[in-house]
Structures are given as C-alpha cells and as structure tokens.
Length: 460
Image 1 (spheres, one colour):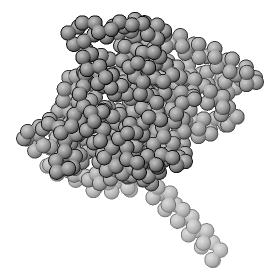
Image 2 (cartoon, rainbow, N blue to C red):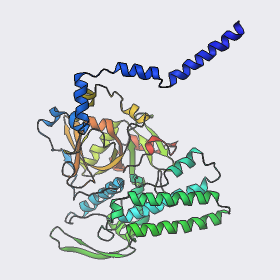
Image 3 (cartoon, rainbow, N blue to C red):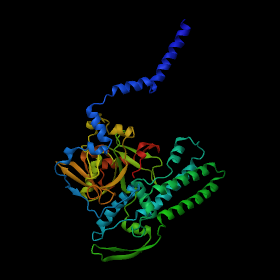
C-alpha cells in the first residue's frame, strides 16, 4: 500500500505545482470575479482610453504658484543646441562643455558650435573597429557565450559617455560646425544605424568563420572597415583634414583668421580633454560606495578608456558640483531624464505626476531597487549649469539640454533637489573641484563589471 501511496502523492503534488505556475481557467475566473469595476473605475477607463494618461495624473497643485527660475550660481552660456532625432546627447553635451570653456577664454567671441557630425563620423568608425576586433579576439568562444551574444546583440550604437568625447577629441581633434555641417542622417540616425548594424553583424560572422591566421584576419577587417568608412562618408560627409576658419566677435567683426588641422584646432580651443583631467562620479546605491568600478567594453575606441567611475553618495556628488558651478564651470551629467518630466515647463520634480491616485496602485521602489530591476538608469546626458542654494543647501538645479531652444525652459531643464537625489546618476568634473579624500580613492584597483551590467547604459 505504502509503495503506491508515495508515488501517487508525489504525482498530485507535482500536478498542483504545475497548476500554480500557470494561468489556469480557475485562476482566470478568480481574477475576473475579483475585478468588480466601480463607477469611479468606469470613469477612469473612459478617460484614459481617450487621452494621454499624463494629462490626467499631472499634479494641478504643482502648477499653481510662481515657477522660480532664479539660481544662486549659473555658468555663462552661448546658445542651445539640438540633437534632433539622434542618440548623440553625450556628444552634444561634451562639446557644449568644451564650447563654454572656449567662450570663457574668448569672451568677445560670437555664438559658436563645434561640429557634432565630425566627431560622430569617427565615433561610428571607431565603434565599428571595436566590434570587429573584439569579434576576432573572442572568435574561439562559442556563439552562445554571453559576451559574444552581447556583441552581436548590439554591435554599435549612437549613444555614449564623456569618456568617448575625451578619447575622440584627443585622437581626432575637433572642427567648427560650419566646416562639417549636420546631414539628415546625422540628425536622424535610425536608418543609418540599421544599415551599419546589419553590415557589422555580417562582417562579424564572417570573421568568426574565416579560416586564416592573425595577419589574414586583420587584412580582411581592414577591407570591412573601408566599407564602413564609405558608408559613413555617404551618410555623414567626408571629414576635413585642413580648413581655414575666422573667429568673429558679437558684432560680426573678424578677430582672427587661421588655417587649422582638426588636431591643431582642438589643441587651441579644446585642449582640456584628457580623461586623466577629470573624475567620473556615479551614484549607484545598489553597489558599495567609495569603490572604483570599470565596465568592460564601455568605450568608444579599441585602445581607449572604459567608463571608470567612483561610486559615491549623492551628497558627495553635489559637493563637487557646487564647487564647479561656483567657479563658472559646467559639468557633464547623466540622469534618467524621462522620469517625472514635465516637458512643457522643462521641470523635473517628484510632485509632477500622481499615478497612484488615478490607478489605485502604489509605486514604492526606491532608487536602489529601481537600479537592480532595470527600472532606472542613466539614459541622457546634459550640461549642469546652475544651482540655487538656500540655508547652505541646494534647492534646485538647472541643466543645458540639447533638444533645441524651444524645448523645456528656453532649452533648459530645471530639477528639484529631491529629483536630483532619485534620478541623477553620473557627474564628470575637473579634478580641481574634487576633494582630496575622493581623489585618493581613484588610485584603487577598479572592480571589473561585465558589458551587460545595468550601468553600461549609454546616454542618448
């Protein structure tokens, strides 16, 4: 009797376990019975079926009163840029910070913009080489190896980080916007990206399957890069090697006219771009603070620097930011800009929207939990240009965005200090504004993180 009872009980237990793992007809019936819509539910259903939910959840109390645009410390600025339909915020932000320094050194200079297309050309070429060379380096690993899968999943992107800006300017220099202007494909990178990704996957597979020695593989990779170079010339234009440029003042009079190479132009007007001149700070509460971290493959050139950051509490990040702003120096920051954004006013506040009252559900996760579950991360780069301080504490902050001068508040976004705590992740500051106690921590050996780590996110 016992010999047949235990298998029978095990079978019943297994059957119950399987049922618990599925949406069974019985579970469906219980869910249907549990949902008994009230008159309020029906009104909400009618409303959200016709309009953007944000219209209904916008906190009207937050719209009342004065929208304060005063700031205690604000960096002088020289115009708003527009990345259009592209993921190049990291590049616009980095070049805007270099432009601010250029303007500070030449205060009579008229409005100016570095060419984003010029550096974007080499960014895409360098990322293509990074992908192809890493495919060669990993060709003995199986296709289902996690790193190989990650490479083919995203061979190239138009997003990036400040480290990429620094490496690219150091290697290729910079040029004025009028020397290499924006094209449709620079402003709208989707189609170009699709073509490049498809070609790189084809090339990567060919290199993995190719029979040959290292020299033959490199020769084939060179031919593949020539194809990528041609595609970039057709979509973005051919980068200049020599050009003549006149600096003008605000009355349109010529201050100087000289002939430059991209490298000599950068040396004169954008020389402070060495990665070693800056400290990359991160506020990631899911990891130990005061540790140095490095993310594998999170770079723009094969020989370049991976994103390497010191993880600190947000209060340390703010201390550095205030010191820089007091000295009229803008900073590269990365945040989760889509969260709680009132785009019309250009306002980032935890009180902008109230989804809970409308839908009858809570959203209790904190910043650490959002990072751990991929619900939040650094998605957009902007230049931090202002802070307002009351009673020795920051009250609100302002960033120069790259969505055009008609977006937000005159091309800017204003964020409350509470929002800063919840959704600010990255800050890049010059070393002279960083306390010695933090600089000493930069000497430790970084903890290596894989390329599929949540913090690999590139700002776009």
